[in-house]
Image: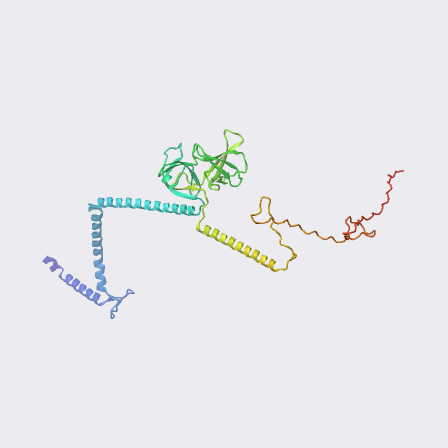
Length: 410
């Protein structure tokens, strides 16, 4: 070691002097923002050159150390220290499942609220009295299209009552229990309803086929029936009121048993496979809303006011007639009330004598003469004075007319 310093002593001293000089210059020189070195007085934006060199020397190792530290930490946290990760994953999975169930319940509640809102709005506007019920079960068989509702005889339900939704008819009540009822859907083979086509006004019977589709049977072939035509209840079955929507015509197929007849396949208006809430028509007597009752009361009030005005006008006309001078003789006796043959005089009263109308005076008839064209002597003569007899006037003799002979052609 001594031989190295002894051998390169001059060179080492020179390098030390150069390094000290460079460091001195670096301390005195400032680097401006524009990148120029200057020995002028430093300003706020200038940086000493020694500081820049120190930063350039220290920054790479520091960045390397920081990157190594972060990599080591992430390696430990993400790959090595995983003792509680599985438990946390299980808890998070349970929370996610619970939130999904709550979300599904909230969505179902929202949909049910919308359905109930539309159903209640329809129930308020519908003219007949209805009871809202909820579908609680089905038959569980494809051969029978029945389902159960949570209302029964305790709520006023009875057999053969119509069941419907806001979209259209659903079926009729088949069996009634105290707090539940069985409903036969319209797409069952044993069901039936009288329907009418809205445009063509053709009537038929609505039934369900083996596949659970609606069809109208008993119709003669008619080219006027088109797809999309609305089908309404006819009201002839005494179960469904007239004018309720049933569905629309889907297609027309020929009847396999009868040549001249057709079957009309109908797309139902109500969702028969997704029934949740229904309405049961318990009374077909019309009921009116508050606005309609107010309108009826207003119309009755107007009618009463018009009747009072008519009575006042009649009374005023009677008073005016009494005040005006009459055309009858004031000295004449008042006319007696006419009695019908079935009426008898009361005790202590003498029956009134019948009133004989006065005989009108005859004016003297004008005597016709021969100068009056088309006039004939009047058969009635003027009344003769008392004590004299009226003599009939002699009619002028008429000359007999000669019979005319037919003229012969020469």
